Image (cartoon, rainbow, N blue to C red; front, side, top):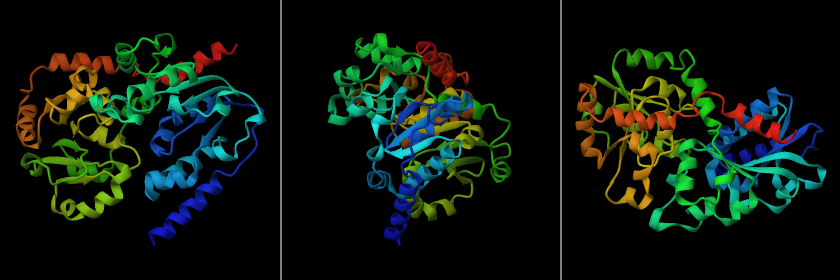
Length: 385
């Protein structure tokens, strides 16, 4: 059954990504990874161009690779996003079918600066490395660098040579320049497109499903993003509190198989398996997550309280997290046993150090105005005049 499902998804993706020729007004190109999250992260930027009547093209990696890398569940999400973009007139094709001689592009946006194929470089006036996640630092291994997860791979010589601009949030720009000044002249401190999605979602009236609201009523709500419920502390098993369980979407299918009995057992639990986490953000008061979770920065930007669980004396020093704004804006505990104490202090208003946390949260929110995509598009339009 699983093999049949994979074959169906593979066929549907290949059909969706069949070659079509470049249009005259197609000026903007995107080179994206295999993950649907990254495609969704640039959707607001694509929409900004589409609204201005500027057509966009997206080059996708090999279908077989996409499925093997992300699984059939994530590939189905990717397919949904592709169909949504095609309905807006966006050309979506496989890189292997693409012919660079079909014309020139004004700008190509990429999310990995060191692996840009030469034929893309040759037909695009500007190449812009675009921040898609809330922070890059969780991909680094500090003193334990892996070849594809080092600062050198993200912002080394190859990247510097391949790209014209790096578009990032203020705190990421500071982080880059603190390690290397080589990119200083190429950095655009505009924010990243996902911020616009978050800003718009948090300013909508209400995205919280009716069944959630009936369960929540006036209770405190904790967003739990770990992959299992076995570590859930006693304080969060109480009927006086609500827990929204939102594990990583790429592992959701596997997690649900393992956790279905635990989910049934906890009457105060809400399972969030929606495509976006906007409803969870709106409904919850506190997010409890692992160290380095990219979601943490977005949650802090929404003006919420974040608790990160990890060994800050060992792991975080190796990752270099202590100097990061999102780390300073969050509350930290060493292990799961300390969560009960945090919950008690939080609900009693006795957490302390709130001014320092708020100060760092404001740094994260510097470009949180819903105008990131507008700034990006306007900048390149002015360059191209």
